Image 1 (cartoon, rainbow, N blue to C red):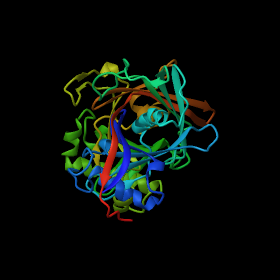
Image 2: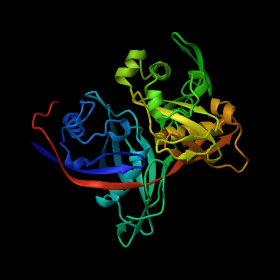
Image 3: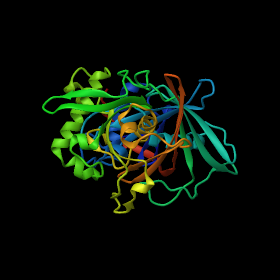
Image 4: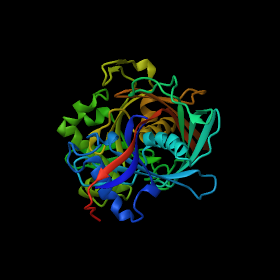
Length: 382
């Protein structure tokens, strides 16, 4: 057996294995086989590994000290595709980015400062900069705090994940098609209006009512609805083709399963979350459900929430059309999702017809769950 140092961490509402690049083989062609074995893939049960059978619990993150100016560490996120012998590196994971901050500090990549250490990161999936603020005290990361986030029991120290200039992470532009609203032609269905934008990761958003949903359904209800799941994948695949990530719908499934994400939304609406707790419409500005790797996410991917928050502020998008103009002093968007409510802080600058997004920030928490050695078989396949 081969042995590799790893730290198993929760970042936001995701979890996975963190690796220092220096602890992995220099031959990066070996990495996929190692990571697949670590997670127990392609077995969908992942019984022989550390994977959690859903996309949010199947992340690997590789971190290393950066030589870039004003950057402390760089990182690459791998999304293991459950049930397949495949890892997707095309998109960042905002939730696991929260874990990169404390991981980088603990591994000595960043000098600790009290009471807050700002970890300056560069994400190599999207070539974007991210700052993560980590509470520290007496030369250590704080382990206890009073911050709670939807989808995670208990409280932890508050981290703030700030995506800097997140526009055009994969396409180079806010609206990859040039339009705040597009009409997608879906085989067997007809025309469906969508907002397609690229903030931290590409995203396609449609009204829940246009795909036969209320927008308050729980993930399993959507996953078990084969007709709706198939339609949402056709919408996602069509948008992928429009953005140049795939040549056809089959290619989108095979070669671009994580980009773009597809989300449905509706006006604020009350529902019982996945823990059977009441989520009130008055506590949110918009209600969303997001598909990630062919399944409905149990909360909202952080990068998707960033795109949703930005789209909500821009006149002409479907979201602006549904929830209306923000209040004059409004600086946040409260997003209702299957695990509760997430508050986003989009910074948007309007200069005539030009729109820029200097940053999108969110409150998160992270925790080290386990640190040690993970074992993989010697027969590494390259």
